[in-house]
Amino acid sequence: MGEMTGQDETAKPDETGEVPHRATLGRSVELFRTFLVEQTDPDRFYSLLAVDSVRQLGSYVDLAGARLLDVGGGPGYFSTEFRRAGATYLGLDPAVGDFAAAGAAVSGMVRGSGTALPIRSGSVDVCYSSNVLEHVPTPEAMLDEMVRVTRPGGTVFVSFTPWLSPWGGHETSPWHLLGGDRARRRYLRRNGREPKNRFQESLFPVSAARAMRWARAGRRAGEVTVVDVLPRYHPRWACWVARVPGLREMLTWNFTVVLRRTEQPAPAVAQEDPVQGSLSDVTR
Image 1: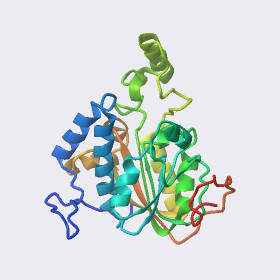
Image 2: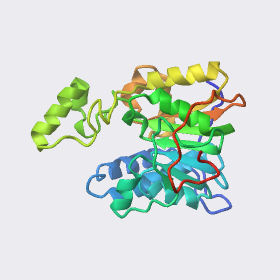
Image 3: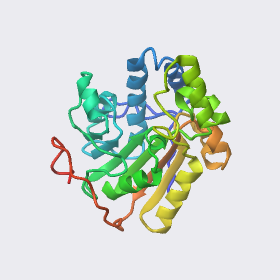
Image 4: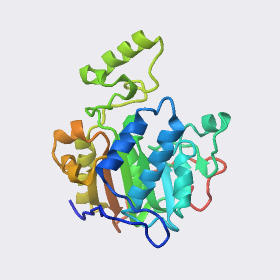
């Protein structure tokens, strides 16, 4: 599978005072507890998740001075932490206008689609995406785009919720395991409204196996090296589940693939025009 990295369970603050990522059981429990209040206290959950995510990504690549694209960045939380880590942050989200209308900070963000990034090829050091892949109908197209915009030697980090995992149906879980349409109808019947994540409209059944087939094809084509695969929120001693076909679909909760872009450039893909307000040195 290429290179592998491990996490230091006894890590202490480095010379900058930052605490390195530690994949411990205590961390997993804390993330799960804050996840339970996501709907009632989103600031608490997303602030903690952003801090943890930046530390986790920082265990694979030095973020200080890195030009980073966050595909599906959402409002605020991640941009603050990535900039605090020293990265030059550019977020992309199709709902940037909605964030601005709601009063959320959108500095350094552009509006666009994950499957047709308005970003120049090979222009970012790190391409990152958290919990977006399951929301696009053609995940391979988004993964191809993430690789395209990353410079040779750069890092691609993508994490998503497999359909058969406990939270695969999002707010319709666990009933999605009996069928996405059935779970959607049940949610509508019980709540009087459609779920935010609607099956086959804004939520799609993506599997870890599908992501790994794409990654292996990219490796055979000489476009990427697989650095790591892991269950994003698990303690280190449980990371083996991400390497067991079938089991990883149900137990990873959030499946993560870390890639390194090789020297061979990907085929050019026609792109949409950049939106006004994008960063001129990376957007087309």
